[in-house]
Length: 253
Length: 360
Image (spheres, helix red, strand yellow):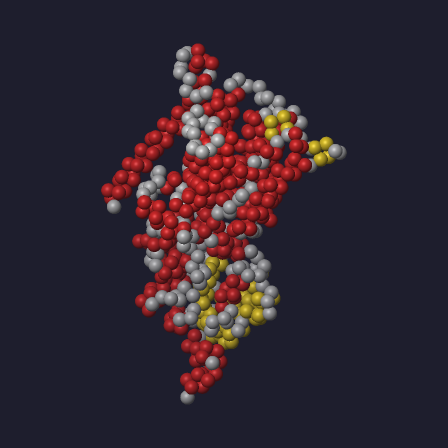
């Protein structure tokens, strides 16, 4: 991580409550341009809620989020997308009546405001992105003909076609087998290599260790630890959060 | 598979040719009623009654095609579009009857006022989804009709009240023919607009909203602005049809400018033909309006329905339309356009598959 670079994304005390429950509770961290950061944590830790806060799906109850120095808290989703923050959904949300190619083209037609394309150019970009994620051969198929791993690829393709500067990936590897995870890892690396900052939520530790140089651990809405993935995963508090106190002790002995 | 594709291709070509001949006949036949044609001994291919029906069909082509923009492409089931028809009718009607504007100057204001009204009510209404939007839009459609009839100022009805509004007759030779072609031109505009929308960024944004509104928003689609724009566009086209109707019919009141049954009919037409497509709603409008006229006994060809007296026919027509709606939604969810130029053939297996898919 380049310490000298100004942070691209800054979260200061970000809080989101649902009724009495603080799903995300004063979370503070920064991400520099070009980083690839993992967010991990047990179920219900607030990972997806945090992503929803950044992408404008949820309104914040407290704190502030700055993108390249400007506050984006309270902005509607489409404006955040226009600034260059793209995301995928954990449960894929393809446009069912469209072909694979059209799905990706919608990303290219909209997305990052600097460089929105006319339909013809959008379809050209869609083809390039589909090649990047390995869906080129299935471009003209309807979404209903895709397998689950392919739908996850399409979810990423659509977000990448929107030309984001920061890509938020919500468990794109969940439910994939080992071979598919390797392919998905290559895909994430390929996207990152095009100069996109990546923030990914993942349960599969192999993914975090494989691609991230920094990991942030969330637990009950708080940041529990952050740092190099190998170090963080050996942190006693992190093991406790995942396995409970009893098993953490047993693991140690 | 290849043989099947080739046969569908042949089927499609046949449909396009037959369709083109029918459309050409419908558009050109009325010309034979011109005095010049009659004195040249051209056989009369369409009488005045036919024009009237043909003009009504063209009017419904406009309404169904316009509804398709908000209901079919954007996926917001608007049940109150007749409000825009009535607003268009009353805008032109008031300007011609009270302000004494020439018809062709007053007509362009009908779509403008209807679209402005749609934008105004669309901002709050389009925040609702699914059934809530359908019910709320139905309420607006009914409310506008009631308001227009009941608004008084100094004890005088502002918009003609319950006795309606009479317009001076538009002085032009071959009036029937003029209004027929005017309505057909608007229908052509509506279809062309749909064709253009479906190939634009705007259209892809609308389809994205229909398929998954939240995903569309995080991809950068300004969902509120797009929905309101689609609603206003549908309203403008519907209002234009209403504006023409007011001058053509010369008399408008709540009953003929805000008929609640039009709401259902235009949706049924779009569903029957195929929502989200360019020509589907138009095809549905032609088929269904012919059926309505036939059941109402207005067509030269008429069949006696057993056990039904002539007086009861309009009621039976309503029942048949209702049954048709159910059958279409269950068995032909993508509309009849799917058989012509689409990728499917009408067959038992198609109907069975549709039944399975809709019951999911």
